[in-house]
Amino acid sequence: MKQSETPANSAPVLASSRPPAVPVFGDREQAITPGGFSDALDTAAMRGDFDKGLSLQVYLPFCTTRCISCDRVAEVATDSSVIDRYLNNLGSELALITDRIGRGRPLAQLHVGGGTPSLLNSSQLALLAALIDEHFYIGSDCETVFEITPDRTSLTQLELIKGLGFRNLRIELREIESSAPLGLGRSYSPELLQDMLSNAKQVNFDAITFDVVYGLPGQTVSAVRDGIRLITEMSPTRVLCRPFERDEQRFEHQRGIDSHTMPSVPEKMSMFAAIVDQLESSGFEWIGINSFAKPDDALSHAQSEGRLVRNRLGYSDKPTRIVLGVGLGAVSELPNLLSRNHTSLDAWHESLDNKMSPTCAGVIFTTVEAKQRRLVHRLSETLRAPLTEFQGAEQQGLLNQLQAEGLVTAESEWVQVTDSGRFRLLQLWDPDSGDLKIAKSA
Image (tube, rainbow, N blue to C red; front, side, top):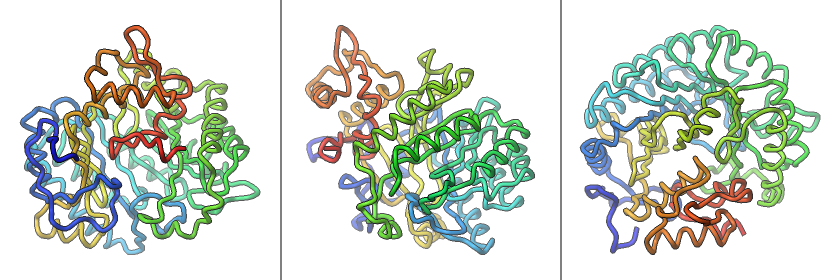
């Protein structure tokens, strides 16, 4: 943040003198004290931000193995007691947050992800649901999402997950097994996926989303096309796509990936183009920038009615842009602040054992930056925005950048995302730093 600028409508967020070891948000990241985050929550509550639609993301980092392509905070856990202790302190973190913003606030979205959340046993899943219920109100209109791993999820567990109030499933998929597997993890056979999908449909979940990662080491456009064809045959409700980004500084295990096998930016663009073509020709509607849904799905209706919203959790038909994250490495998104928790399990536990927030770092946005982020979010939701919202030197500068890259056109009263921009906008925009990654994409 520039010295001459101040955060948007916010009391100062106190910075710590000790910077985090490995920045998650890039060069913009600065250390934040637990007290500073608490002050930010107080300010947001007084401003009424949590009354406009609130999302909660609960992060469960545990897996049985560490995939070489994993780009998330993860911990290998073979002892159930490790998860028990984690859930105990998860309850402590929820209490610290709701002590500031008030208990019983209604949630518009609840997302439980990981990691491998389906690694939890029945008692642990029930405890998790009870902890959330203790601190927030989950009404019938709340969008409840639970991430599962096909090889760790039985029909009985799906029935329990649905019984605990989760009505939507999300499955991260990096590869559908083929004759030449990439060996990067999260790879499942078509038979296993189809069996899991059949069980999920039997339990009658509202929506089943495949979270597809493309641009993996050694991956080809042909392989992506074949994988998407198999997915369309399985007929999930939604498909979410995102490009793989190698970051060996944050994830040391990725150093085992040969950089020469990484697809180039043009190759990733070709992969996404193949995904769009395959899904649209199979009856899916292209939602926003990187999601797809069946025509009768809630997201399709929200898009056609101009109600589509996008936050860190993806697209939703719920009017929510505030996200509170709890758990190891979890990220919270306020209008002027992105903050994150410790990514070290020991440090996360130590904070909560001492009754302190595990928040340790983040990015503070100025009023101008917050407005620019909101404008790009709007473009990714509705694919256009009123030209009047780009008034002022800073907003005009953003518009000039977007136009120079061919991402938008400005005609008459509207700024409209171009066909090329729909493919490229999220790959060029860094939602964490608030900058256009023009140089990085060249």
